[in-house]
Length: 630
Image (cartoon, rainbow, N blue to C red):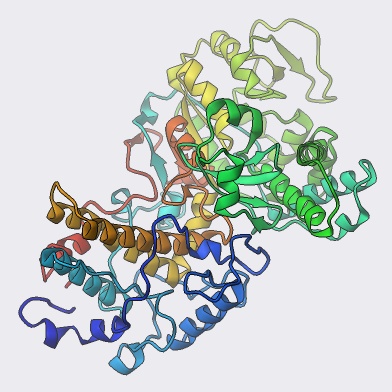
C-alpha cells in the first residue's frame, strides 16, 4: 500500500503514472453527459451530436472500441455483447480487481482516452486544504485501480458467514433477506404467499411466449402491419418499474420524487430538451398529471408490455407511418392482457411445465418447516385453481394442498384488500364455482373471490399476526399493509440478478469504489469550504458532481445499458425502490431465501442491499490515516 505523508514523491509513482494525463475540459452541470447517453448498439440517442466539438457525446461504436482498448491494456478478453462494460471476468472474495493486470509503471501508463475510465480530479484555485483532500482521494482511487487495495463491498448486515441447516450452503449476499422495518417471525402466526413469481418462478421462455401471443394478436386481430411478425422479445431492453406515458407512448423512468429521469420513444432515447418540452419545462410530474398520463409497469409480466410497445412505436416512427400514441399503447396493453385473460398463456405453461416453471429444490422443505413450527400457511392468488394446482404439483408435489390451511384463487388483488365480497367454494375436481354461502373455511377446500377482511374475520386472525409475500408491490402488498396492518415481504428477483452482474464485472466494482471515494470527498471538501462559498468553490463542486454522475452511470450501464438498475434513477432512488422501501417490511430475491433463517428470526432495518459499510477504511485514509488501507 502507498503510504502518504512527507514522502509523497517517492511513494506514489503508480498514482502519477495513472493520473498523469492533463485535466480535460471540465464537465458542466446540467449537461447530463453519461455512459447511458452513449447507449448500446441497438439503441440510438436523439441527444447525440454530430458536431466535432469536445462536448459531443461519443457514439456506441466509439465507446465499444474504447472498452475493447481498456480490456486489451489490462490483458482481459474483450466483450462481444451489446453492453461493452458488462462481461469482464468474475471476481471472487480472493480475487483482486483485475487478476491479469501488470502493475508496473510501464503497463499502467495510459495510451487510451482515460477520461472514460480513469478520473483526473479537478483542483481548487486557492484552497490548498481542499486540494490535499483531492490528492488523497486520487491516491486512493489509484491504489484501487492498480490492485494495491481491495476494500470489501458489503452492507453491514452481510458481515460474517451463515450456513443453512438444510444443505450447508454458504449464504451469499444475494441470498439474504433485507429489512426495511422490524419484523419478528416469532410473533407471526400466518405466512401467506402469492403464486406467480413467488411460490413459482418462470423462465425467460414465458416472456417470449407471451410476447409472441400479443404480437400475433396485434397483427391477426387488430390488423397491425405484418412486418411486426419479425420482432422477438428482448429481455435486455427494459426493466421493471418503468411507466408508460399514455399520451406520447414513451417509456419513462421515474425517480422517487416522480421526476422523469429518462425516456425512450420506441428504441430511441429522448433528449433532455424534449423531456423538458413535453412536461412544461420541468421533469417533475404533478400527481394529477401522473394519474392521467402515466401507467406503471411494476410486475414482471409488464416487461413484455414495455418491450412490445417499444418495438411497435419504433417501427411506426422509422417507417414514417402516422399513429396515435395513446391508441397504440392501449392496443398493446390489450393484446398482452388477452394472453392472460384468454387462458392461452396458462395452457401453454401447463403443457410444458419443465420449459416454463423453474423447479425449486427447497420450497417444500421451507413450507414444511414453517408448518411444523406451528405457523399456518395461506395461498392467495389471482390465478385460477386449475393453473395453480398444475404448477404446485410440479414444484411441491401432488399433496401440496395438505401444507396450506387456506387456498384462495381468483382473488382479484388489490380488490381483495379494498372490497367486501363473500367467499365462494371452488370444486377442486371440476373447477366449478359453487353457490352455497360460506361461513367457515374448511380444510382441504379451495375458495375464490372473498376479501381480506372476511378472511381475517372467519379465521379469527389479527392482521398484525400475518406476513404476506408477493412479487407485485402494488397488487400484493400496499393495501394489505395500509388497511390491515399485515407485515409484507416483496419477492424481487432482480436483487439476485443485479448482484450477480455486479460480482461478474470488474468495471462495476471499480466504478462503485471510485464513486464511493468521490462521495467521501464531497463531504470533506464542503467542511473545509466552511459556511461561505465563492465561484471557485461552486465550479469545483460542479465538476465533482459531474464526475460522480459519470461513474454512477457506468455502474448502471453494467446492470442495464438503457435504464440501469430498477432501484436507481440517476443519482436518486427510483420510484419503484422508494415504493418498495415504503410498503415492504422485508424483501428478498426468492422465497427460497427463507431456508437460511429461523422460524423465530428477528429482522431489523439494515439499510438494504445497496448500503455501504459503517466502518470504512477509504474514509479513514482520505482524512489522514495512512495505515487504514494496509
